[in-house]
Length: 139
Ligand code: SF4
Image 1 (cartoon, rainbow, N blue to C red):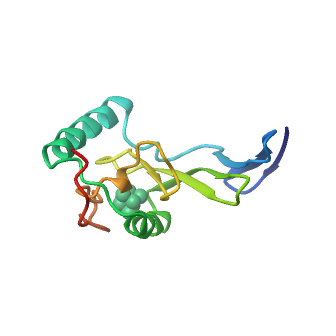
Image 2 (cartoon, helix red, strand yellow):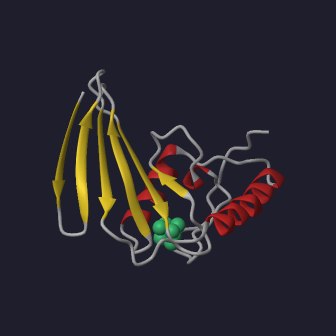
Image 3 (cartoon, rainbow, N blue to C red):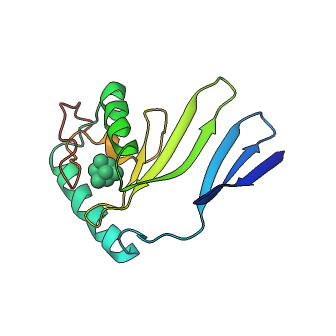
């Protein structure tokens, strides 16, 4: 396992190579002017979103819709990059977080298997940059 880091203007960028060849890229900000919503506020936002999502049948967005939403988020001033993970098959999992006070959620591309706001078809951007999409009910 190896880890190479280099200081850049606003953050330290590190690329770590895991024993299986997976590459993980992280950027650690020196200081954030905007830390995003507090933990209690994020928990409340997530709880409200979860109740609404389940009430609608937990519809999931397609990979194409997830990636289209993610592209919009990546260009947004409220998007905070968290990490890129390159798997041995070349797949890249990209992860970030929304710093808007009405959100605070994990944002990721379609390769991410964890909880991802962009995968929930009924979700909307808190400032209207993307909206609901047709989804598939999972319950
Ligand atoms: S969810 Fe909306 S506000 Fe948050 S990063 Fe994405 S586009 Fe920006």
